[in-house]
Image (cartoon, rainbow, N blue to C red; front, side):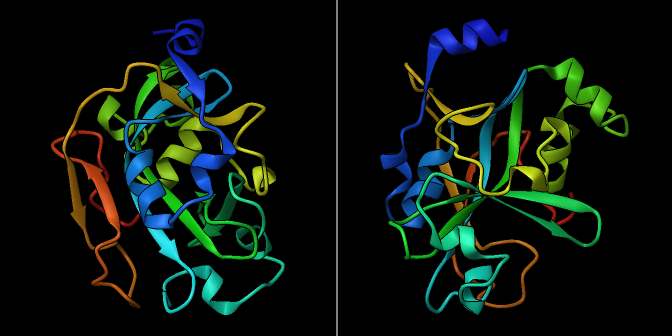
Length: 201
């Protein structure tokens, strides 16, 4: 598949998709296509981070310079740096002023695979290119410069298949956190070989 075929077979997800309950958005993002320029992949692994009592969420600390985007309008990117090594992509959910976001943990590469391989030379198999939150941002060249980017236009978008593929969804606790660690807010495409099982990128 190339980028032109992808554009013919899908359409950009509208803002109204994100202006819903975070857990619902996290589940419904599975099977959608994350695109940044020539490279893209089908989302196969997500985690929901809620407002309120979810102490694992960055928004639990309230509005700060770092978290301001989470409290803003839905359908924007929240990109943060972790472990001094990795950038992670989240998509802002819920109506404005109500915090919520979805971490994109893994994608199944679709277009621009040769570009992804140049960006991720350590990946020996296609399954390893973007099977983690830090891996996928490197493979797609997503950086903190895109923090706050509008996900409904431009180079960084999520697209929906005109004819959605069918798959089963598996729900598990989130990975690599210590607070609210037992909450079942991770969603994966069951049996997909591109799913991430570890916290590191």
